[in-house]
Amino acid sequence: MKVKKKYIFSIILIVALILIFINTHSKTSTIPTFSIIDKTQLVKVDMTGDGYKDILYITSEHNNYYVQIKTKNKNIELKPSKKHYSLGKYYSYWQMRTNLKDITGDNIPEIFIQSSLNNKPIQAIFVKKNKTFENIFYSSNNILGFLYNSNDFISANYINGKIHAQKCMFIDNNIKSYKYNMPNTYMGLNIILDFIDYVENIQYYDFNDHSRAFCDTIDKNSLKIFSKLKKEKTTLTFQDAIFMPIKNNSHKNNSKNNIKWILNFRGNSKDNYIKNYTFTLYLTHCSNKEILVYKISNIECKNKD
Image (cartoon, rainbow, N blue to C red; front, side, top):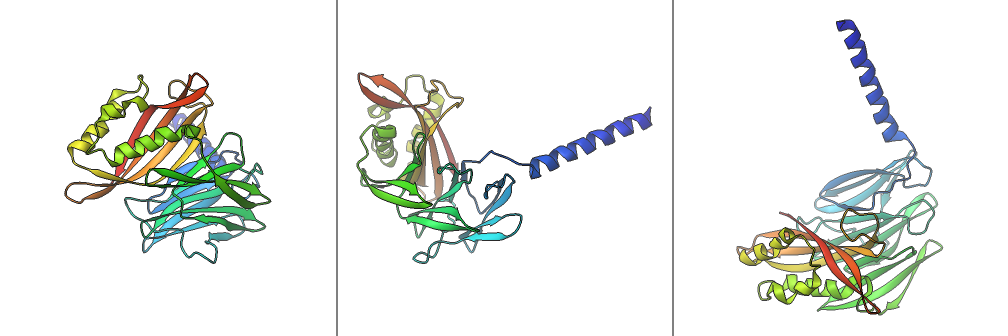
């Protein structure tokens, strides 16, 4: 009986190892979308369109970020264009963010990077060209946004309460951009501007003056972060953000018109202790006559020393 149990255990172990091997080496069509990078991260994803997982490796040496792709045949280092010299530096309060998104529809994800250098924002985009990945876009803008069913994206700068935006388009593996006046309610822009203003001035504003931005059904416990920040006399400074349409999420009032914004702030406590605060906002639209009005239906906040 003991021998039989031993054989059963051996069979289960072998099957488990085979499943792990298949998961690691088999073809895949799943592309991770968004990652916040600490000092090191490794992601397995098909970066070449051959259907097999490559390794996207991000690390920092002497607080400088480096990005490499290891395929079956070679290692490819992602380098900024000759005009620029860095993909950003590591700060505990301002970490690199990567977004892998097949925006051109060729089954090969483009690599969108947000980071900072000398406390200034960086945006960099890489696309596969021939046997390497080329940096085709580099900007000091602080907002990156994706649109519904489109190969366009938004690169914008938030300065003194105003948005200066570009709409960017992929054409033949290059990017063409032009000035774009974002409508006030587009992708919930007015709600986000109000939110940034409130958070940056939380020590002076009353929450009730900004409560109109939140749905009545929002979890009230998620709003306690604001009273906590105010009580601790923490001041926050906006650093960068990304937005994207979402579908099939677990939050209430799900529809194709829901939007997720991820906003990154630097927080300074009253004793000059610095940490990162990342707010994830889920926006839901409701019809107000003929104008789409977005409100915050869910909010999450994470902070890192």
